Image 1 (cartoon, rainbow, N blue to C red):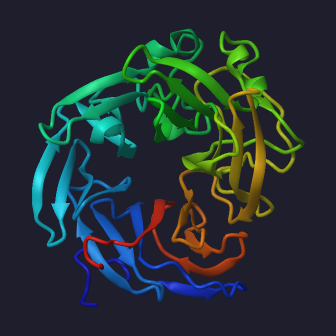
Image 2: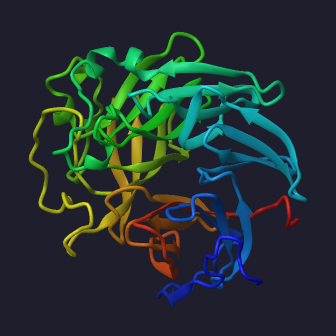
Image 3: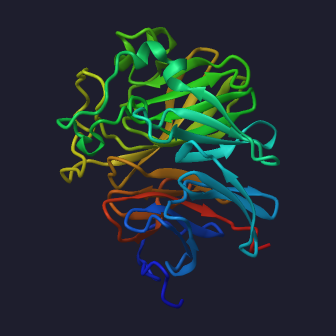
Length: 376
């Protein structure tokens, strides 16, 4: 590779794991690398850079594939459709909003995006719909309205809080991933509440259907009765990221979700304390004993329960990160952003290969895409 525009490394340090499972086809896409936010980096299995995507000073959140084109974030307030030759064929201007954390397909090909109103004190609490043909932007949900009874119990981040760098911002829910479901519902990850949230009737009369996480957090709120019951003896997720649909279960209303369990407890917008298990991290950089996990939850909406169907430990990352399946073999790509490593694991959670990278504090996500707009 020639020198990069960003100055970023063209080769990563690679460590072999113990699994002999073949790696999935495709390229690793490193997204929102702090210190290099105007770029996306794509590496092959040998850790060699194959593509540097130049953006408008903003990091990628996710890539959506639509035929022979992709849709992705290109600036803080723009999405773009790009073909296999790198030509921008359409730009979606989200004027008045700033993107954060995730995009995904919704109903009838619409693009859903997590966003916040530009310049507002409240951050990371709105959901937009973008018409892929006309570019029309619609605000579907303002969560401060949808969950007003809880919102009124919160406050802006203060200088004495763990996330002091956000002082003055009202980051009361901090939505960091979305997953649209066929029944016109949406599953979201809320880092600030350490809760997975399902919103029903998204395009009609949106309502909160259920909450999954540590039910003690919601005990003294109007949402206590919406908490799914934890089934089984395990430590629930804390500070989770990138909740994604994995597969259907053995009956209607039963399905599996994958997530990166940061296993980090921190609350910055509500005066509330809660004791957590010793295995849960409470230090942003870690003390050396903590681990994060790839979790697979079984959701049973018939019995209103959730259970831990599978898990494996991964390097600790208090914030950011993802654990996502790739390839037909069921391999996992796991990015532990604060630890500055990502790895490919086999279906049983055994490491195949790990990649170490450099950044300022963290890299948000790493997915593995087959990049079929180039390789067919």
